[in-house]
Image (cartoon, rainbow, N blue to C red; front, side, top):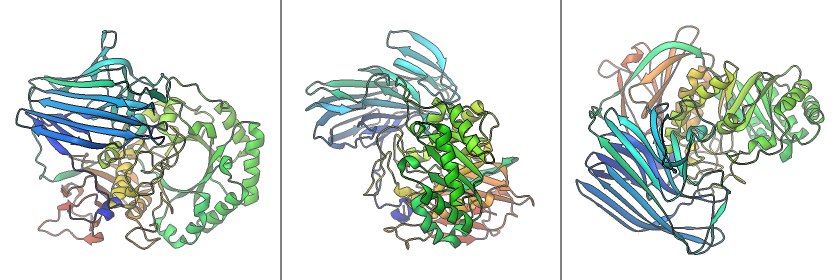
Length: 635
């Protein structure tokens, strides 16, 4: 990698390089004590086997490894290490792990954990991730803890609850003639459809969620768990694609109109936006979304500041309005309407949600007190009779899938996503894009053609429905559930943004919001970055490109390897087609753009050299090399 690390990731911290383990046709990447990308003859069998320890807010401990020993030859590999987790109260959990793999397709991951004193946790044990690409909706055989065996299928649409419980083993087809059995010992396991959180996996995890949490591991008591994978059969080995072969881009038929692009504005960010109006105009969002939360002190002053910005940048506006919902709904919402009128804020739409609905209600938990949403929406309609009304969840798709709001009273439904709920490594964040088409398909299956909005969705977590708070990130690291993420400021964030828009484009969204204007979720640099404070971050150019595509007809655009490069295309009313490409990897990727036609004009590239324009010539006009996390506009 030759590009500046900070420019790529917004941080100087570099992820540990995985160690590739190999035993015959079986391969796996060993990363920070766990296994990723477990393949057999090049086909992904499992996305991960990981031993995870979570705190009471579902934050994940990052144990350091000691006594690490890795041995391997052509027929087998073995790994052993020790590790420990230190809780804020000083209690400690020590564990010893061994991993063994062999050329006959066998893999065993065993861990024994021993707390030195009572250790509080929400989960301690293995998580196994099955990939979704090629597996969603496919047949599996499930063995339960009582010994019963059931032939069933993985869910196609996203299951709001656990599709399988009381698990002992799961068997699926890797490819014709080859099966993989994953067996789990040491406790009761169950599966959740992790696509709910935009993870690209089905997750089988230890300890049923219906049991109380947090719970305590008693001091001095050893807890042992073992995961065994067995790949069997002699199916045809798929032909390996040459990694040096250029990825090809192809255009298809025109589809729905590409959505308006919104920018979320918080009350404390208004002044900065007013000071950068020319930059906001250059960015060109079609809508401003104003976050208003009286339960956290927002009042008339916040609405007046929104009104000033709306007057200075006159586009469509949506008030994202949180309500307490613990009293007279008409009084509360008419009070909001009165303050909006008093502030002089002209709204195009209002989205309303009770504050309690920002918190998750996991399986087995009691639903909190909340007024019926039909009553909430009726009161909002009476308070704002001439304003479009939206509802859904201001948290994530998970919460909307589990509490499906009544659609009839609404003009649109909405939700957000966040890719760092469970893991924050670079690969997991980019892989989360694979889950987005399943999310939009699941929303459409429930709400039909109802106008549909997504966002604000950013890499960082703006609120934590699963614990007391988001995680502070003062050292600018890759942290799950963090309130800010360094990659938002790097080329990584720009590529993820284009990839996100590409994945949801076929759903025909009404609006898509992937950033704020300033602040940690913003398109402008903060202090401490390698550019002047207030200068455009790489994501600025990505969002500006999406704004320019808004209202165009979406043109189906595919690549021959969408794990590495995604494409988004739109056709204007004059017939001109513009295409955006995003390299989702930390590697150089050759791309053949001959399928886009030779009349598309120059290529505009944002990469480690920041911004440049090239013209295709006769010698190589149809090929380019996209450097790590580069984005390219064609036409």
